[in-house]
Image 1 (cartoon, rainbow, N blue to C red):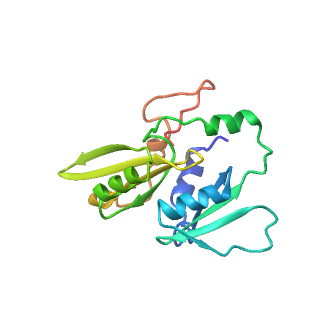
Image 2 (tube, rainbow, N blue to C red):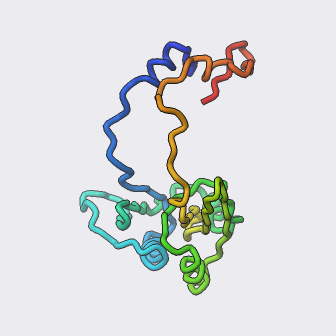
Image 3 (cartoon, rainbow, N blue to C red):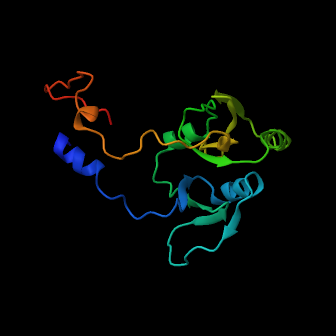
Length: 185
């Protein structure tokens, strides 16, 4: 899809959707009950009722103002995929992940060690603020981060939502093969 500067201006200056908050994250899992156990025992989620009209195996969990919806894989994905997911992957903090704020990173690390959960840590410093991050995988290889990220203030990059078209289109002189400016977004 090619978006011209006019379309981009109207998109960026439009009213946002009437969103309230993140409601849940949905994960495709090999074993609902193994995943329920992990999210209950490691992360402190509670199993909650889900609609009985669903015709597939799954579970809903809730805590910290967010839901985790687990959907059991219907085995339609090939064996190669299952073998890849069963193989332990390196823990890469740059991978897609779900992040949870905590009050005590050292306690998190001690508890993960007691439970035998493999993790890596990252320390980020900026302007005198220090954030400690702990990354690990759930039973299906989904990345989880636990951090004290509230140590960084949330500061807007700008005071307005509108950016001139040149910001998005061609300000660096980068062009696609068809000669059109490469968008920055």
